[in-house]
Image 1 (cartoon, rainbow, N blue to C red):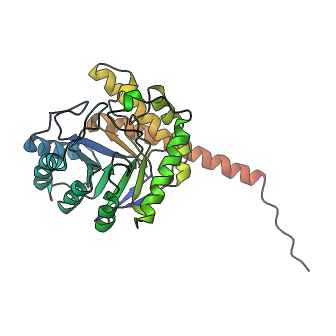
Image 2 (image 1 turned 120 degrees about the horizontal axis):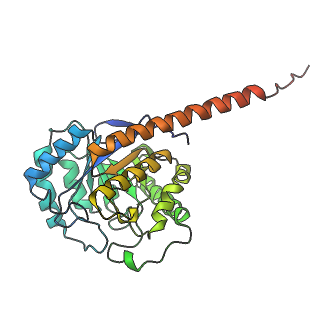
Image 3 (image 1 turned 45 degrees about the vertical axis):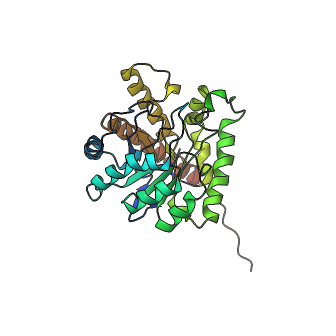
Length: 304
C-alpha cells in the first residue's frame, strides 16, 4: 500500500496528510457516550483534558457534545450548545493544534466555527441536516464526511450489507459530490468509512481489511475504531489492545488519520505502523524500479 499525500485545507491553516499518520484525540462532553460518558461533562475538566490530549501527542482534538452510541436519542440544539460552548470558550487560543467539532447540526457548527473550531466532523455524513454544508463553505472549514447507515436508534434492527465496502464507496462518493456542488473545495474534505454506525459485527473488520479500496475516491481517509464493540473485548485492557490492533490495520490499509480516546497509548502504535508502512512503500518502489530497468519501454523510431 502506497499512501497518497494530501494538503488538507482548514479554516486558518493546512495540514499535510500522508507523511505520517495524524492522531485525532476524542473529547466527549456528554453524559452518555458509550466509553467515557460523563467523565468530561464539566467544562473545566474538559478544558484540562484537551490540553492533556495535545501534550500526549494529539494532532487534532475532536469535541463531541451529543452521543451517537447505538440506541442513543437525539438532543436539541440548545442542549448541545450548552455543553459545547463553555468548553470552546475556555479553549480559544489555548491549543496549538486544530479543534474539530463532532456535530450534524448547522446551527451548532456555525457557533463552533465562530468560537475557533476549524473542522466539522459530521457523523451523519450530511444526511441529517443538509444546511451544515452552507456553514462549512461560509467559514472555509475542513469537513469530515462520515458514513452512517440508518440512525443510532435503528442500528440494532439493520441487516448486514451484502457488500459493505461497495455500499460505503457508493454512498461517500454521492455525499462528496453533494459537498462539491455546494461549493466546498475538494482539498477541504476527508472521508470516514464509519466503523460501527449501522454496520454489523464482522463487517467492521471487513471494512478494515478492504480499506485500501476506499482510496479510489481520491480523498484522505480517517478511521475511528477506538474501544468499539466490534473489537469483541470487554475489559479496559482488552479494549486498549484491540484498538491498537485495529489502528495498525487501518494505517497499513491507508488511513491518514486515526481517531482514538487513548492518545498516549496509541502514539507508539501509530509510530510503529508508520515505520512498517514506509518500509513497504520503499520496497514497492525498489521492486517497480527493478522491473522497469529489466523491461525498459522501447523507444519509438523517428520517421525519416
